[in-house]
Image 1: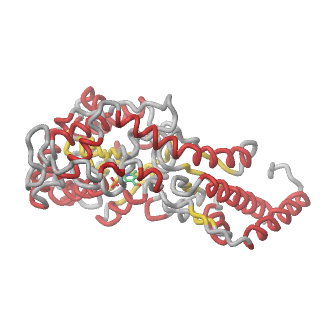
Image 2: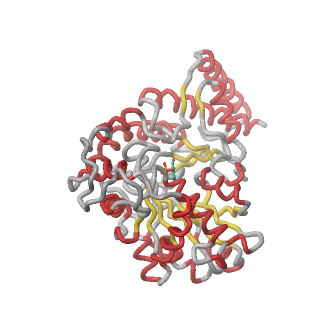
Image 3: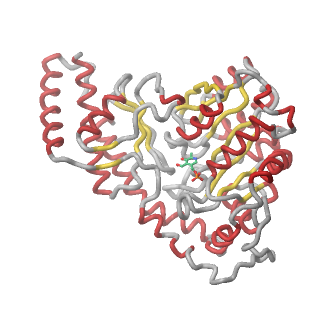
Length: 424
Ligand code: PLP
């Protein structure tokens, strides 16, 4: 469908045909859902052997009785698992509780209220501080800033990562910018993997930023590849070491989308100064993490290579769902300008951009036809997509057949909304 060259008559014919198709689908009373960025039950079952794995043996190889209090930084075995996941030496890693989002919230509030480098470094000593937010991005990151009253500034995402010219120019001009959110691999929702050059430029940001600048490097999809020759993410730890800026990056990851979501182990990787600053505040909140769950996870992945083999099983389950989404998008929009998307090699999402001003309409049309989509705008700070074009597609939970059925409706809604716009 090439709208640009079509006559009004042709557009009207298309509109009638698409509306008829849409009304027929509406009458079917479908109930499909592409909103849930979480593992399917089939994926979760891959890790059910975690239950009972300890067989009443609670002592770690390093001799820690995991049933008792203590060990704020996590067990050595769990930190070693963090090393495998994050590619940072275990000495720089803390293994925590069940959620990396909690860790991000704790690091943000520590930096904001108490300071990571002593009380004088607390961000709230300054008025009007800001954070850079590559968009589209992860809504829960944005909610943290919003709750603390940190002003969010949009930075466009490119196919190589955040637009670094824009980020550098803003940071140079404004020392109240205290940090930046990053999902560097299979970014939520664009699926983009940051290029080596972008990683290097991010490692150098602290040199042009005001004091206390911190990049929140949320590597939630560090090993969540869908193809064998998956793109490699350059090490931000090595890049900051080379730049002399190790204090400027806080890295996060978890096993949430590896084992049982929300019942796994979360990790923080950071410089000694940041770890020490955080531990002072964390030690007031807790006596230590759930080390029994840490031991379960260390045992579950004790055999070398088992983590990768496990992730391949996830990929086998997820891949056909992603392929279905991409097939429908390619067939419907491969030869026209009605939509744009990145073909993700991993992660949990495919991000689709309609023509300007149509995302809300497409989400509403799909909803009325029984296909639930993430609300338009959710991928932007304050829920406001200035172009009203981005829609996040999350295909992991429904079956392949359900994804297929939902995508038929999705592409139809995009076409219908686009033709109606052209006629308006
Ligand atoms: N970070 C990103 C980018 C996510 O997409 C998600 C979950 O969807 C999380 C963090 C949540 O991680 P956790 O379960 O470790 O809190």
